[in-house]
Length: 99
Image (tube, rainbow, N blue to C red; front, side, top):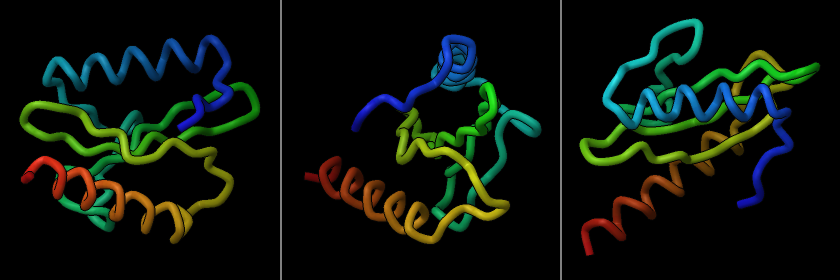
């Protein structure tokens, strides 16, 4: 997956919040919100950038923060193809973990 074209400020902000998640902290609004439509323990991290809004869709597992998707938010709702991609990727991850 290619790195999204975040500005330096947005890249630092995303890294800061992801590090907090890795250290076991739970984020809430306005930084993160649950995404039960994708699955349990799935959330959306909100990153404001210069003229753009980014979303990082992730799942909190006991031993990892799994990033399922990073995309530029352009509408009020999460696009159905993004939700489907996340479900597919997390299902694939789970099947590989079981093997």
